[in-house]
Length: 369
Image (tube, rainbow, N blue to C red; front, side):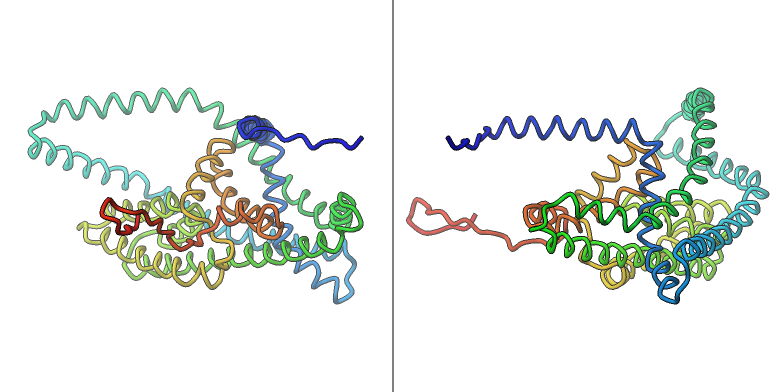
């Protein structure tokens, strides 16, 4: 007797899907200390793979090629870190002065609010005092957790280069493992999917790095022209925050605007910063992202915001930075596997034409809905 195919009702499939999704998210949260450095290492390894291949083509031993590539990457990252640290030290020296200016601005804002809305100043001060007290209590309760997070972050920082080396070294083994998961009849399709996905992911990540460099340069130059203090530091921070869609852009412009309000005699400089960042965002959205990062892996606004919030809930700040590149990689894989193409289309930002359904009115004429 032939086995009959069992067809489950739709609600049973939905229940199984939700249970599986819950189990997946729970596993990602529990194993975050293992997964976060591994995901960072995987993305960086994909990014560095063409450099390793370049050294191998000029007849350098594979292990030596990987070591040289890692060494050059660490040198570049260390130089960038030293630059940011020097700027942060300058900011820390003038921090008390900035705090005094912010306090003065806050007092002036309280007086204006009191006059305009007819609210007693003492009530506003009492509310601010209570809010400060609550924040201090929260800060003291999370101090131990913060120290633990910093310690684990240092461990992760040392683990990532090790993971990168091993992923690059065992790349042939991992690719062969993927091929062995499928029967021989599917090998040509598997090879095509792996090759296309790897190529497009590399181009996407390289484009993302180029976007970071361009955005950091544009932000820094704009702030230097306006005359904002700590322009390079704020420009680089803004470029990294720009990876986080929508939320990061707002934070990136808020920081230099606050510095402008605290260090300048007039609020016009903050408006100049807002105008400059708005113009830079137009360049980024209309030229840099479509032409350099590649429009094929753009994620629509709905899923971009959802995945950033989910990433923050699961893995905190690292999850916010990893969420969009990981989702872009997932979309690329979906786009190259026939049964999963509808899901890749759903994640993208290609709007289909609006379908007009026509109905007959009481008078017999057709109306578009």
